[in-house]
Length: 240
Image (cartoon, rainbow, N blue to C red; front, top):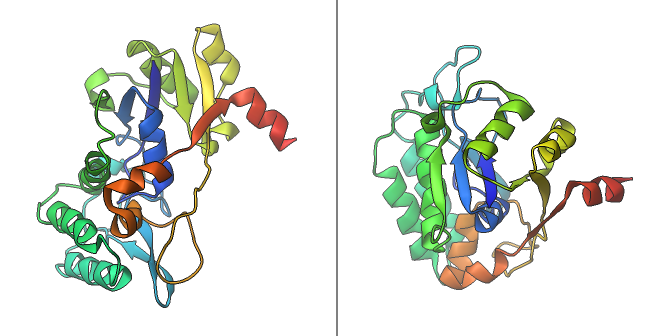
């Protein structure tokens, strides 16, 4: 069984959807510390004037706050501003209404923290492409597993009965691969293809919100969610 563990991200890029597509069980990992500059509260949007960040403003944070503790700043207009930005970005796209409806539906609900909003936005893209079929989605808090880094991730995968842990390239810096293998769990890393598709506003960029894929291709965009995961040894050898 393939297990993917990830922080929620605001209307994330296609690469996040590719991780979900390879998972049998996806764990929402939102009780970890919020880090400035993460993609939990911001995402890139392509516009006629270049790529812009769409950012949810946050309250002054306390040191060590987890993602599911960070609240929004008391600014009422950011939702409307985001929708206007998306309208301009997707103007002329064949399935712009699909993308705008998804964003509007997510923003029509009040959320207690940035983690719950980011999760709702992620799940909205997952459901649109029917990536939730034959998969389970679990909040890490439901498992009651303490700790941090490799040890905690290992215990989560073991608890779920996972045989393969699939993760993004960032984990290559800290993950104890041999520890996982001692427990009979293989580690595989995403090998993103960044498969080009026709976009508005110039040259293709893979790092914008998945809403962009929806606006341009609708449900047919599923064919561009097509990366694979490779064994960690292969990735290490390639990097050398």
